[in-house]
Structures are given as C-alpha cells and as structure tokens.
Length: 131
Length: 132
Image (tube, rainbow over all chains, first blue to last red; front, side, top):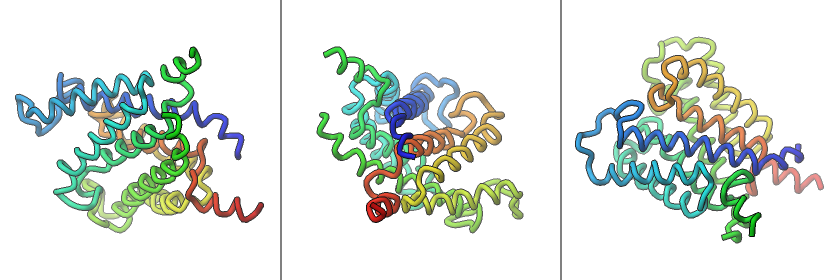
C-alpha cells in the first residue's frame, strides 16, 4: 500500500482546503452573520470575538490558497488552543461534553500543517517552483 | 522552514492519536453513554447507530494504536461521509447550520491518513521494521 504515499501531498492539500473553508465559515458567522448568526453570542461582538473572527476569515483565506501556510497554520493552531481552553475546557474535561472536539480537531490539523506545509497544490508550492 | 519537515511524520502520529481518541469518545457516547448519553438519541439504539458506534469505538482504538492504519482510515472516512450526507446535509447546505463540520473534518483527516499512513509512531511502523 506504499504507492498510496505518492498521493499524500495532493490529499494533504485537499484536507487543507476543506478545513480552511469550514474555518472561514466560523469567521463569517461571527462577523457578518453568514450563513446564520452564531447562536448565543452577544451583539455587539466582544473584542476577543472580533479578533477571533478576523483570524478565522483572514487566516482561513490564506490557508485555503496555501499562501504562507506554515506561519498562518501556526497562528491558527494557537487561536484554537486558546479557544478550547477559554471557552470549552472550563465546562468539562471531556470534549464530548464541553463541545470542544471541533476546536481540538482544527488545532491539531493546523499544527500538523505547520510541519507538513501546504502540500502539492498551494501558492507556496508554486512560488517554490518558480525560484 | 523546510527543516520543520523532519518532524512531520511524528506530528502526523500525534494528529492521528488525538483524532482517534476524540473519535472513540463519539462511539462510547453512543454505546455506553460515557461520558454522557448522546443528546436526542432514542433509548434503544437503532441498528445503524449501533454499527456506527462500534466502528467509532473499534476503529478508533485501531487508529489510536496505528494498527492497519490505512484500511481502517478508509472505512472510517467512508463512515463519516455517510454520516454527513445522511444526518447533516439534508438539514442545510451550510456545514455550520447543519452541524456537520465535525463529520467533514473527521472524513478528510481519515482520508488523508489513508494516503499518508500512520506516521512515525504506530504499530504499523513497529511491525514493518520487525518483518524486514
């Protein structure tokens, strides 16, 4: 099954794009109430949530394009770690109870991208080839 | 930043273990009501939930150990695709509205694991080294 490895950099790019698009949606929900407003969030948004939403939209777009994938992924992994430990963990140590499973997934996918890079299909890879 | 690549196989294993542990929890919530019962689930589990629960529990354990990573990840990725299109997608097109972004993330992480394998730390790696 080792010949599957050939496809890994390309599938990594697909994973990166899908995760980034889902992540953007979290930002648009907070900031512009698209496709729906985030339930249970006060209006106007607290500063911390505005910062989070800007990171999610801006960082998500960069990550979807695969531009500066490693530093962007590093920042977003940090954002998700903060989100987990400030918003979810105080409610319960179990992700199944505190609803933080998704934040953990994002955090680790992004953390992996810091080390693995953007994959085969990304602006980073295009720029590296041009050099 | 290319020197970060040296750590990628090890971080891949960490990602695999974390995702598998979270996934096991989805199974234990359904099967054993641990740490809580699933909200809105009927008291007697429908067969399809039972199958899903055991796939999540058993497949999650294999994946956490890194045993038969690629075929297991393939099956679980398929399970999550089915879960998304059966449970979530009919409610809304938008993942954030239909509550299915977890399922999408699992699906794609597992799909990637099928191609990338278990990473540096996994029973697959131990077995491969021994059979050489």
